[in-house]
Length: 629
Figure 1 (spheres, helix red, strand yellow):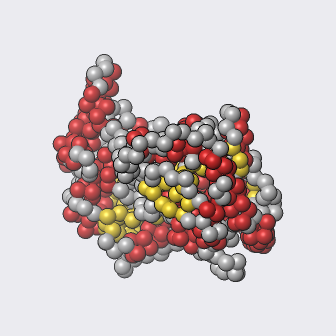
Figure 2 (figure 1 turned 135 degrees about the vertical axis):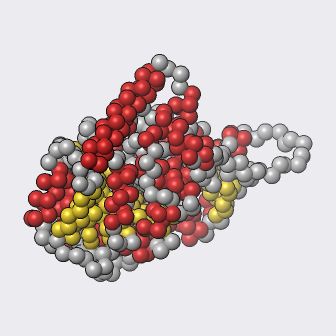
Figure 3 (figure 1 turned 180 degrees about the vertical axis):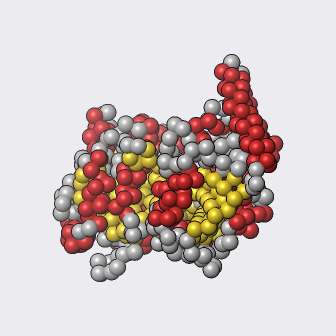
């Protein structure tokens, strides 16, 4: 009977599979090669069966990303070890379980997954990952770490809420928030995504890793947690099951969902305790969870598959025929339906009513603006300028602040700039004919902040947000412009982080970072967490106005569009214009600003109806309806 040592193992992968799973399979392949087993690789197809060949693959990746004609045959599946890695209760777990039921051997990296598979009648066994030397970029030596908090994972609302709650604890510190779109495979590096050696090296430079489950199911994300611990990055995780043999408080920190952000803050202030857990976890992995433990489980699975094959009833020898060579058959990624198409195809009665309502409101605003302009022409000036504070000789950044009836909030916006860690800053505040006490609020705030350089431009007639921003840009003296609305705030280190990003990427026309959204009850979620990828703009705008622009780039696209049809969508038009010019954007994977969510904000009106805005955008940017932006 053949033995595991006489067997070749072919690792079958999908070309578009998440690199997360590739890292796991590569680790297992390295262990097998270290044991003297021949390991081969195949992409998007299964090599023809052979008596000495066993396949190893992640089932939901193959069956989700490879054409069904290239799926394993019953004979190939019987010679396969499937490695299940997904959380019970998800579509990916269900797909894996269906494939696993027909496989030669089934392994799951999580004990919770093993229990669920066994409950479904699948004979599965636990495959703990253990210590992987190739993942260890730290080596256990004492070192300084430049990143205080890191998060790696797909975006979910419950994750965004916890991360938003961490913002107050990160003042004066650095974070690396690496979020991806859930359900979209990430096959390799790029777009700010860490993988393989780069990820291990970055984790070795991180102090704490925050782990929040995708859903309320307390499923332990072993791959993420162990990769951090092997590099001395201490884990703070939401309570989990199936965590043995790790011990909370000794090898990692565990907390209830609603306590996670507070625990992050407490541990950032307790470096001695963090250091003790860092060392304890690393030593435990190396001594109690060695790679040999994982290897033994893999070898046992190979033996089971080989043994099953040898006891199968022999069939008559068929007449020899040429065996076709397997052809890789990856499934192409499906492009999601652009949101503008929904409006182009919508024929309901509600749409004209919503369109008419928005048009009435916008037209009334335009009439009021024109009336104010007529009144302004009868006065002395339509534009008055008052300067506060010292003159910054060579400002590095000009903050463009537009105000229209935000007396209650504009002071917070100005104070957020005044307490910025970047000192070479000026503010250009344009009051767009406010009818409340916004002018007085700005001036009162400036008197409280005598070190802040602020130019207050007061308009007698309302010109609208885009025109006010363009006017502020003409008064600005710095090459870099940061756009700030009167009800939002920039974080103390936000401007400095964005300047650093543009200095690192001189080819970038603008930089933007992660924004915490909040309301009267507190933090809500995150915005701006995806990097600059022009093709994403086909699905709508995903970048807020709070960004730092190079003045020449803004001038090259003609500034902000003043088309009334784009009311509330001026930012989207700006990013489309940047993409049309071929400009690059730099993304900062750290928190830079705070966005106030309010039912009375400008976006509330713009969301009444999108038809006119989509029409204007499609006329101005026909590439929106093309395959790529």
